[in-house]
Length: 339
Image 1 (cartoon, rainbow, N blue to C red):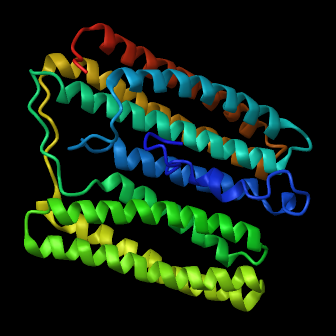
Image 2 (image 1 turned 30 degrees about the horizontal axis):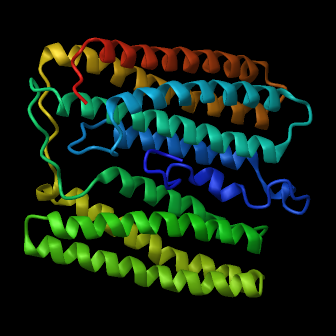
């Protein structure tokens, strides 16, 4: 469910778990679509967490807690990868089971990446040789995650086959991430350095609530009376919500005063941090390639190269995860972590 415990990193499963096992909805899940959603999610996680240094913790988890998470989730990921391979190779694969496995896989890799980044931050922040981080007014990662989750959720309104039950899943994802966005805005409204920024963030929190209310009204009507017209209303009123989130992200990226400073890390500490960062990036990359190979097998089941790549990228991912766990273990045994 993610380091936050609120399923914010598990939105793909949330979108597709409604109706699990129901004969009425089993045929509506498109595993190729879920592959695309999974790849977009993993790319967002990698870009948001691994291509920049953090200036604040991602959670309250300790270093030892992060190592435990890396161990547990790496094992879970290996099990899910094996199940995905078995399912996709089957002549008559189970579309719903495949979709749910992809959701579990996305959540596993997301949490592994989150745990590795949190571990690195805690390692640096709690070592007296490292310069302390200066937290910015707002954390970009929950914003990027919420933006993608809301986009993927509301994209469902463009599909004619969406049911009222699936719309409720969309509503749950949107509500979860709207809460995260409002929390970030309210927090930034207190921490921002200027009165103008504080006022802007408070206005953003209110604006998000306003555009969300319009979408909620449309969703309620669709659930009450499903049909093309009410579905179109949902699509229409989802656009202002996505545009408001985009405006928030653009504002945050444009204002340098909202950005903090990551901890300063000397070379003798960096030698333990860089292997964790490198293996985490490799794991994310291998995970994307693995899901891409799943998608290739689904779209071209007779393509021998696609099946070869499926096994190859699974092995590459397994190796990257093992390196990540090993790097975290080496750091924990080096007596450089104090919390």
